[in-house]
Image (cartoon, rainbow, N blue to C red; front, side):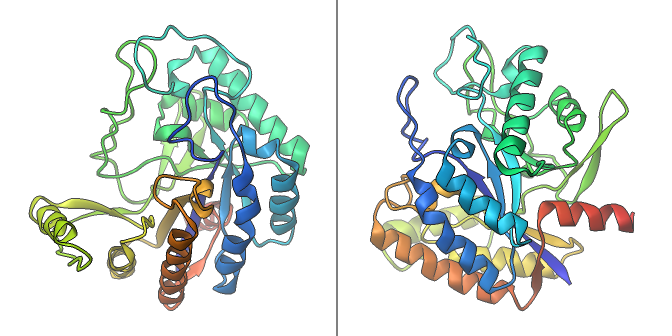
Length: 315
């Protein structure tokens, strides 16, 4: 049976609005159990890709450690370079948040080591799965991940070019995955190690999804169908049919998994620009319930670590 891998970028509250120097809060940790229980209801097992501020929150550690030790979830790593120790001052030339790959190699390594060690120290569990902050990767990044025990990555977003997402130093920008493979593949590094890349499930489609809520949404749907658009299994409050379509297309393809993603802060009212209040959160959960019920007839749950073990065994 094909696998559904549920990934959560587990990070502070509403980082879309965060400005350098402001405190980062982690109150979204109080809203995660509902999502965990919904996943488990359908025998899906979320991968909590955890960043620095979240692993410092005792409430989050208690929550995620419990489910991970019960085999109902996985703790992975998600690194935001701008606030992950050790701190290092880059030369500021652009207004974007800095990518890890902008830092000197030794600083990159120190940041990866610090967060990896901290997750183990706080939970007793060594993370082996990873997603890059702001999706940016390079060969050095993968080499360092392998050095610190990571075996599987899910940072690649096929069909998506992040070059317009600026970093902080002169000329820095996001990674271009517009030509990336949409199936798992091994990334070999210069030191002879390798990491299994499991790309996010994204398809490019010209299918028309009619939005009846407003004339503006209808016009947007027609425009997207004409030019083509990238469809993710990533809820935005108004895309249940699109997500089900990606599930269907993956099911009839030769790909053996589908990957869902969301941010932990999107599970909290006001934790993101997308889900601003309790009403929007209830709509989100209505969509999630429908999506997971639909997918459970075609897919079974898998963590990234479990997928890696199976993939390597079958190779």
